[in-house]
Length: 477
Ligand code: FUL
Image 1 (tube, rainbow, N blue to C red):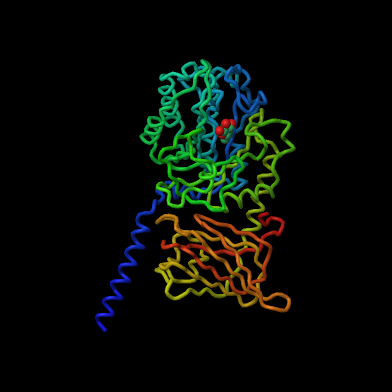
Image 2 (spheres, rainbow, N blue to C red):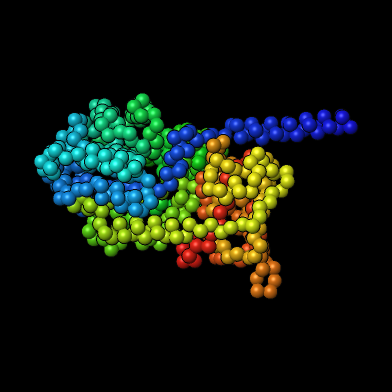
């Protein structure tokens, strides 16, 4: 008997060890990245000479006088951001035309050379102060491609860019996210720059180790592979970057969209998209602002697939966000509040016995706390939710605890209930969950929801299961 017990123990302990090793080897988010995941949704603001010249890519030859907002009010931007439920603002400190929204000592193409506020204005100063006041995170986009700077295309420009980064971090910090565009076109001398990315990265890390750095390949956050704001239905937070560079040398766009299942680095996806067709303000697009329903759909396809949503809302030539955009944003916020405020209640939760984890109380799956989770130790985890009477459901939200890495690779959701005269069963399957996975579908009248995790040998930590009946018009198409 003892012999059998020992044999059993060796097998069980061995299996547990190999599982633990798998989990132990997985890339994990840093504390800063975990906090970034919880930012969910924030605004992008494209603002600069293009706002006044009606261009998307300025030539770099525009006179500084063109930049002249008549009524700039960064607090208005912040109030609108707040009312939309956004948690931060990222501004184009310098776009490809090279114009600096701050009076950089390393350029002669800045707000200082403009007539705006007699050359004494500083958009970054005003925005960073307004963000502090309204408790929003402040981030900057800085394009390395510079169509104006005379040194661009020579080694000297790398020094210029490093100095600009230093200015940003020392005068306008804390900077929560730094957005690096990989664009690498020709400068005024017709040459392309060979960027010293290593040095740029070191400069940021030294000055501000907690800033989240975005680019095609991170190091902290990656591009989602398109500018439509849509993450992959399969969305791994992990990515292989070896052999790739930023910009044209980046991983294929579909890889950026889905991540790599066994990717070596934790580099989650951020979905950037504009509320209007263009990134900069154009009067002709005032009637092309996305509707609250379209924004809600984008939310399902970005945040609802485990990514973050960076929504561009460009201020106009007055330096204000128009009523078209602010109305759409407020409507978007209302839709999220209305549809996700009433969680449907389960009358019971049960687990397959062998899957019981450390935190085994049913409330933990609907307490809204990511810290409490159910850990599934086996290859197939199963949870069953029960409702005394059938309930109409058209949306399920799952959340995964990510501290030990992203592990859930497949979920089967089975609804059982009663149709008009017979019992029915409907099955939906999804792949990854990540920070949040929102699945919406035509309503079912369910009494039991059975959730099976297909883990392929990894341990999984499911922290939340929510069910809703959202407005049927909002169900993902
Ligand atoms: C791109 C730029 O070329 C666009 O103008 C815009 O800034 C977008 C967010 O990134 O690479």
